[in-house]
Length: 494
Image 1 (cartoon, rainbow, N blue to C red):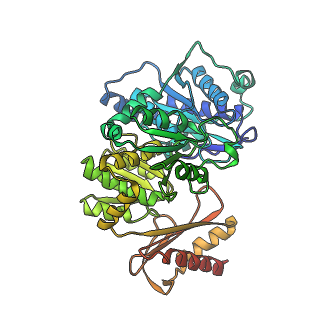
Image 2 (cartoon, rainbow, N blue to C red):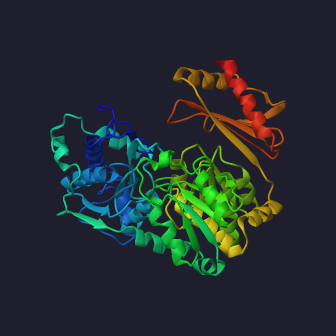
Image 3 (cartoon, helix red, strand yellow):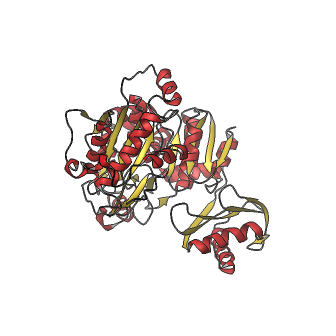
């Protein structure tokens, strides 16, 4: 309780354990001080002031959006955060329904707010929850911001916290305005999606919000465009149906069944706060973000005529590089973590940013990942081309070389992880799977680029005690072989 670590992913802990009304209030007071005092990102800061001037906005008091997901106690904890902000003289616009993180980010931009608090556990198990801070640029907080907030969090015995138990579950309605952020966001999506093509397409789409906040977004948008929609997991369930609410293939088993049973053209899903996405093709195949993001980039460039640079994380598929090169787009590689991509997207020079775990951002939108938009852009691509996704994939691979990838996570102690990283730095392998190591990229961990174009990456997780390994090759069998060799390498070290 006394040692809150606030990162770019926010703060997460077990509900009623480390995540309590008091910890949310402490974080909210730390955020309040950050807003009132930081010389760049705060209300009087040079960065935020310039941001407002370019949009013709001027406020007497700082404005903050407060939202929550569908988890147990999220709404009540959002009330705690809203009350704490209001107590510090900050104007609060509280969401009137579960608010996806990308929608909160769009609300920050459209209302020129100084930031947003979202109570969400993102992809964590049902028994966990958390708090994210979104800064004025419409993206998740960077390292400088989170470090400033963390040092401002009051101690658990601070005098200012005595009212926390009485404020839990109630709202100071006299000074807090409740607003609907959904209407504005959906109207904005209509500018990014070819609505006319959707209305002509007669597509049948299966949706799976995974009991999360996408439930109020997928169906209304698609049905307004005249599409047939079949949905599952659109009701409230604080246990998330007994599964972890991510959009990976294991969590989308029931969506696959729905797609096949109802003969749907596509299945779409988001994790609980909608910053990541998952897709199921008409034949039940789960489509990897490493495959669909380059296809979306190709669609944006060819059909929407978007231009700019492209960025991706170091362990994301180089299929993105092929598309960028074919279309004359400069590509930038970043360390793992979407915060690095967000930093580049805020420059306005990038048409797309992408990471392999399902994060995707595009130009003329928020600079952060948006799973809702990623799903709808896939539908948009199918409607615009007038082809099923399977055919679009075949057409895509007539222009680009197909790549195959695999990844694993291996639990290790902190001591073992440090030993592995130190040994790889001092004595890296010169060949892997009987292939020479051509180059080593240490942008984030170690990425061994092999002769012929295949690669193996080994890096420690930034949030868990895990060694993560990633492999990619044009040969379908090689990634598994590279992962096997990678395991042998780390086993020989420890």
